[in-house]
Structure formats: C-alpha cells, structure tokens
Image (cartoon, rainbow, N blue to C red; front, top):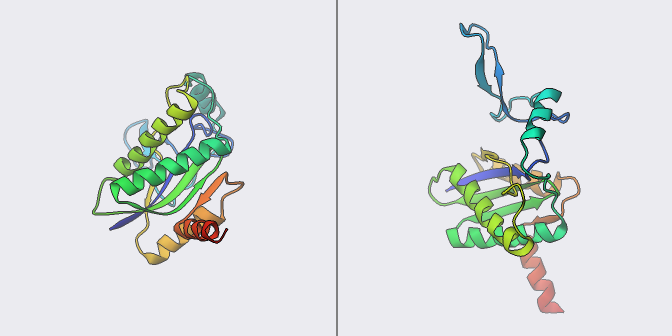
Length: 192
C-alpha cells in the first residue's frame, strides 16, 4: 500500500511567476552546463518556490481561456462527496481532505503501486464531472490546473504529518474531512 499527499489548485488561481512564488519549471542555467539554456524542474519536494517573475505571470494570464475558478462551499461539498465516491469505487482510503477556495490537499492510501499521476487524475476527472453536472461547464474547459503535486508519504510518521498538515494547517478551509469526522457525524445523527 502507498500513501500520497495530493495537492491541486483551481484553474487560474496560482499562476507561474506569482508574487506568492510558484512551483513550476523554468529555463535556467545550471553550473557546468555547456548549453546556454536548459530546463530545470523546481517542483521536487524540498526545493524552494520560484521567486516572483511578473512577466511570466502576465504571460500565463494572457494564455488563460476563462476566468480563474474560485470554489464556494457548495463547490467544495460537491468535490468532497465525489472524491469520497471515487475512493470507495477504486478501494482507496482517504485519510484526510481539505478543500479551500483555490486548492485542495488530500492524504490517500492506495492499494498496490499505481502511478500517482493516475490517482490524482482520477480524482480530478470525477470531481470535474460532478462539478459540471451541478454547476455547468467552465468557459476554460476545466476546473483544475494541470499536473498537481504528488508526494509519497514513506512511513506512518510522514502519513501522520501529512494528515496534520491537511486538517490543521490550512487557512480558511471550506471543507475538512477525515474518517473520524464521518464517524462522529454519523454518531451525532443517530443520537438526534
């Protein structure tokens, strides 16, 4: 079984070159390279964010095909419900989920060793279907940015840290979910 911390942003809400910094690939010269320009990936865990690059952000904004997506509580609840359904169907185990206005974090256990890109893509695809059904298609054609972050949590300590980060360190979450919350909600309903 593998455990992943998955993160993805809503379309257009955190562009490459942003003043907040960004995780992206940029053309950069490495010491010792013979070529004048090479591509360095700055999206490896532990590497620093890219500093603000206003011209890159402006270029990314010009390429957008629709407005940025900003989730409401209704959007977040729709995504949560679909993520839980997707996980149940795939026999994956969501350990923690936080959905904010512009991104989500999820700790998920998966059987075997599937490609984490496929795991994240499945959640986003089924989340998109649910959002389109309830709220209509977006002019950009998507609710999400491409790729996203997929960090393997190598042991129980890393998993616990990922769950803590997801549930306790997010600013203004629209929706938080973990199995213990679900059990508490079901217990509270039974007692009512």
